[in-house]
Length: 294
Image (cartoon, rainbow, N blue to C red; front, top):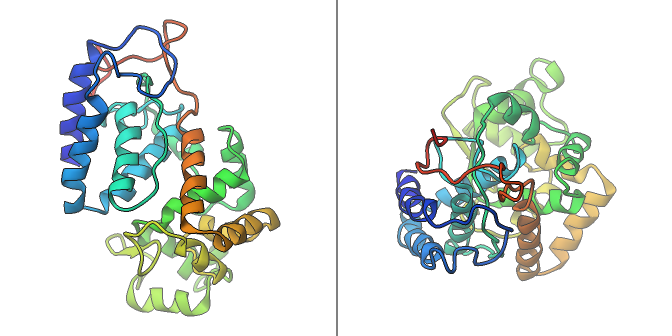
């Protein structure tokens, strides 16, 4: 992730002296004060992402997690980079690897506080059931359709066995040896035999969307209908008539339709509790990406 810090440093240095004290979130926010900002980020991503395509999944999850904790303000990890940069680079990385594009209005200010306890209670967890997921999304102004669409980002990337294996493959509901019955039995057996061989495996990684982890497509949803969602929270999407209907509707449509719908949900997510300095006290523009201004 070092290259992200590098481009973040360059852009933040430019923006810190050019951003207005108050603003509205808008497309092309920096077009006058720093007209090359978005192009610099896009070019940097296009040049480097193909050396590490898995970073596309990491970046979009970083953006998602950031927005769910105190809004989209880069407060989740204060030793990360500014939120406009996270939002733009996440989008550009997905596009560069063949995924959808979406509009990213800019003008966000960066948060001042980062609390691990808030991350653990507000970010949707891999073991959440649908009721909990809907509650978490609703608290951010997102509905069940957004839940299904944004979960579709799991069509790329990987997860460590430690995130799900103990609960789903070895001790479901606290019963020793029990496997989550919502998981396809052949899939579960394959995972236990070839990937997560023990509940204490902290190193092995598993594809979120087997055979398609670097391709942004609809196969994630197809696998859910077969009981092959990796997380409980993935498979939970098939436990409700409304969310299941959304999945089936997506699968009846084209990849292009999925891209458009996904992009709209990303735009909505990107506006969660943004700080724009409207009241004169909201957030700040960090002079150094990793630190709150002193």
